[in-house]
Image 1 (cartoon, rainbow, N blue to C red):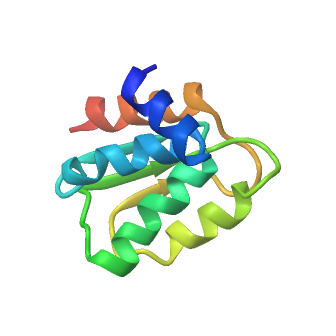
Image 2: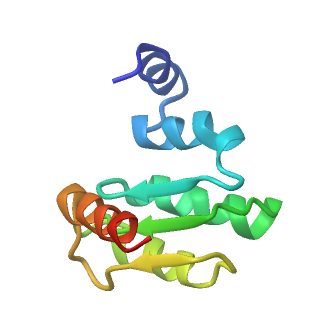
Image 3: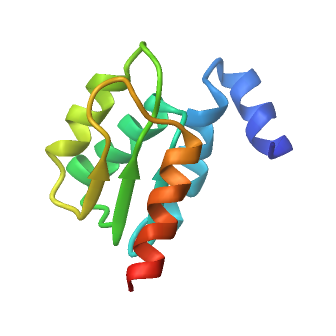
Length: 107
């Protein structure tokens, strides 16, 4: 965990995932975004795409859980970027990484 992100999250009262997405903002254009556990980070990335015109080369959106998971995936579905999304509440880091490996192997 990045100490700067932890401190910022603590100071601002935000989640570490949200602060990490904000820190990654300058790297998103043309990059590959992989989200396996943080629905709020996925929603923030989707907002950057929809509101600011950020254009990642690919977004793999597979957060798992119950809170904001489906909503974040639905928000990503509205984004005009290449994406791989596991619908519903299923997902997780292992599935997201496996998906990225499959994409890389097929290239």
